[in-house]
Image (tube, rainbow, N blue to C red; front, side, top):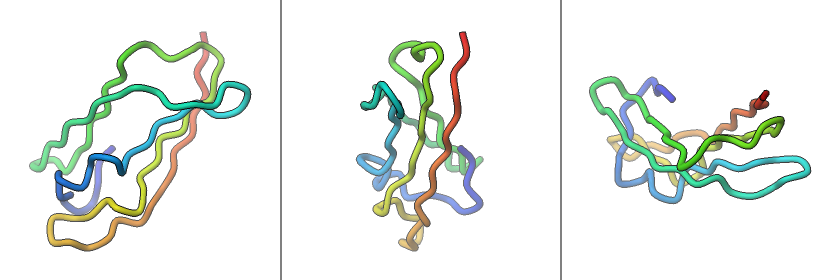
Length: 82
């Protein structure tokens, strides 16, 4: 994910959520790394996605910019094929 403003990396923990939705709800294991120069958050998943499932990636209320401003929560949802 790339942001228009730099993030405070200390606010990443606990403020990114990745889950399956629909008939297989539940969390997906992942790690994050942040590149301040590109304002990009990389999400790496612990294992491949389950086929034919829907995945949601959300930012939560506690995510902040480098100067303490709140980042508006948002959600991206996509479907996995085979």
